[in-house]
Length: 280
Image (cartoon, rainbow, N blue to C red; front, side, top):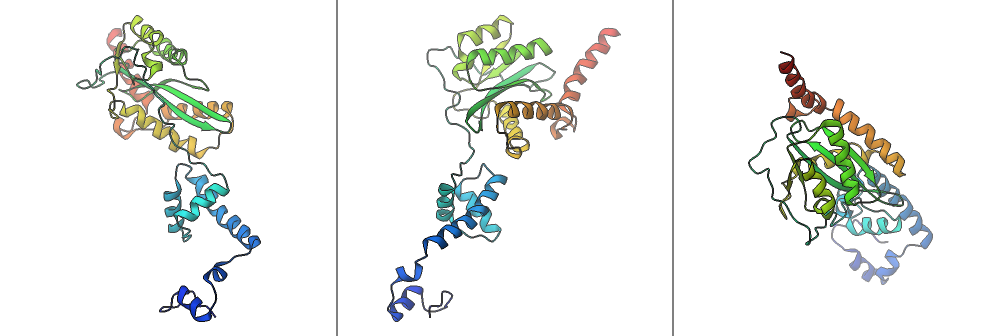
């Protein structure tokens, strides 16, 4: 009788001694294999629901720490069988257009020192059943307040202009606006709109991932604190969820870097002081 846990004799040698093939030992009836895949797959699906951004390596590691040592190849097979897809940023989201004019990065020696001094904007990719959608936001770097945002299933210069228009209409005109070099932001329609409001236009340097670090951190926060925790099935559900989250982010979520104030408190603190000086 074969002993899989034998200390000294391998399965291969035991099969040789008993004159049976290893194929016979490892053979598993199809019905048993399907049942085992179903059971193992349920563990992978459950872990994926908690960490949809984990690939097969991290999924295998997370399951191993829970006592389910499937191995990377086994997890890869189960992901294929159960059509498990990993959430990840879409590559080449901000594709530059070589024909468009680029503007220099103006924030190297600049620190946002008052509300609406420096705004930053970017677009991130989100996935819902049935397609991809895009989230754009305008962030005030002094207070970390999200001034305006929009979720759209298209990504063009008019979409970008519309989000910026909402921020300007509500909060006034900033001194500097920083973007990346994506074709939406370098298009003549968008740059003309920015410059027509006497806003200084700043653009991240090519390959300089830290130039727009604050809004990149915002995307990470939104995804980990809202998107990955809520299974938004439709575009209206996603829009409603993003609206709720940004209200919470601006009004209730304190920031250590702001002395545990909320973005709204920090943004309007500056404004309130200006009003007091004007009244005096």
